[in-house]
Image 1 (cartoon, rainbow, N blue to C red):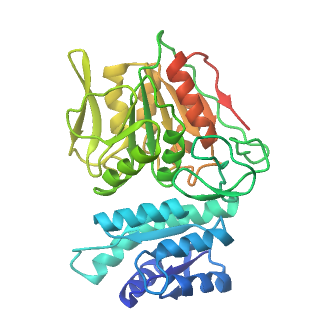
Image 2 (image 1 turned 30 degrees about the vertical axis):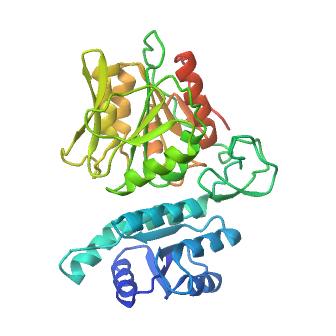
Length: 396
């Protein structure tokens, strides 16, 4: 049974969340709190497996509460409740940078209390079940801290690219050990076409904002290829996320718009509620946004992006599937790999949720299974030197 603490200053929302979760098998709400200060005290007393946290609260807001919590506990999953507004998106990104694990959006214009409950349950239940189970199996992933210039920092508590707190691991910097005995399914044979990598593609979901900040923040400014990214996020959030990454990463990061030329050294983030694809117009590759139906319950969807790259780039793609729930990206990775592209998956130990990368690995589609902080080096080195090498790589 996964225990949940609900922290929200609204009596109505506390009741709504608690009632919604009471109908989820394997989940039990063990307490509620009206602000961050009370929430921290309840965490100490009740030891929940997962916390849901409002952002705007009196006495202590959710972002401050997350920062305080991470000084004491780097493992406990925290899911933020956010509004679909610019202010809500900005605060949510602040919370993720402070160490929050994931977020959901508050119900709006649903028309009834019951409909709001269903919306909350549909959003929260899979996250709570996945994060609660994962936190019991693995401790929190603590990436190696770095100075802003990218030089490894001395051991001790520091901050990551977006300010997220972390402790330097005792093992080799840049690598997180998988559990003893971990063996990944071997990758199926593939035909590697000649020629260098022409484009990088990345898909991510739960835990993706922090993972992307680390990967994109470690890419060189002079990256010789473009990068196309699908992160499961709603509208408004993707624009603000791209702007934040652009301020902190060496590469140029933009929210993709329709008909943008795809240029080296630029990262294109799929906008919320639009699929990102690429098409060739003469000698130029441009972005194309569509409102086609969601795939894997997602829009944007990783599968849609990956699939569109096959006729444009063939096997000259290097794709990475990062942390996230579900299996979005698996089918697209299969199509890319059939064309000769190389597929990289984040390893289980460094993933917040090993759904998406796990589906790729278990499908025999991953040429490399890497810790998060090894992925940027892998991508940039292959983009510079060409694909090179045919064997599957696993770094323990």
